[in-house]
Length: 134
Length: 259
Image 1: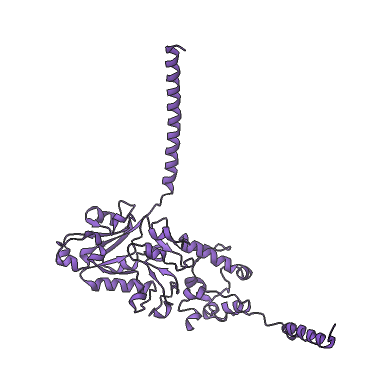
Image 2: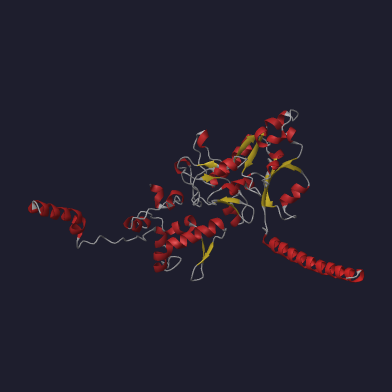
């Protein structure tokens, strides 16, 4: 090997450089998202309960909204019967966004964290929604 | 084989063949009946009483109410215009009725025009993503989520009932109706016969604010108000010769010349 000193030094520097993002952030977990439920409409509820359980909504809300879209837009069915038997209107404007009117503190907190970019709000904004302030 | 046996065999074959044919025939009839049950039970339609429009102000008022309710933007540039219901002159409304002997009044009148919610909609046929579709109740609706903005439907529609969002419509909506979504840049939009209102049991906005000039109802129901009006009046549909089967009917009472 010619010039072993130079080569090994450069190799070590190179490895350090490309692993720098990992090395610099070791042990520093970033803050987990904390979606805020602090809106006037939610505060007024006697029982702070979404249409389904918190766990279900956390894991399945994209699927639920996709099903609603299919049923409400294409099949003309607008009533959703939840697992508890209650009837809800399948509508972002007239249902979800009534309570979750704080887009930047609620929706965006997780979606920004997971780098999920959605365009729901391009159309489904509603003047009551927080997106209107944009 | 003698002649007697030959005739017997032929007669037997004829009876057997007739029985088989009859069996096939009843099978066919059953199949047809099965299809008939899945036909749409309803067919929403609109009747526009031309004689009740006294001037362009009436149409403008109806259009304003419709556009305000449905979050239709007013962009202010003719080539970006979004319209669900608007006015058109005689020549463009009833192009095929060309004659130099129509009264000046009829020729100069403005007529309200909108999506005709055709029975055989060309816009649905050309849509590559099935974003435009015909519902079982006859309404031609759009799923804006699926629209890719190719504008084939705009080229296919013979009535010019579709508008394309060249720019984000949201800043151009004076007062957003918070109960309904808006559209976004890059999708086509058109009249929906106010499907959301029909689901709530209300009439479309234009029919409600027209003071009886626009009637709305079920064309399949012989007892509906619109069928009664159609039964006792002369009416025309736009461009029927194209075979799209418009569901919007224009009632002509003959009094238009004095209107």
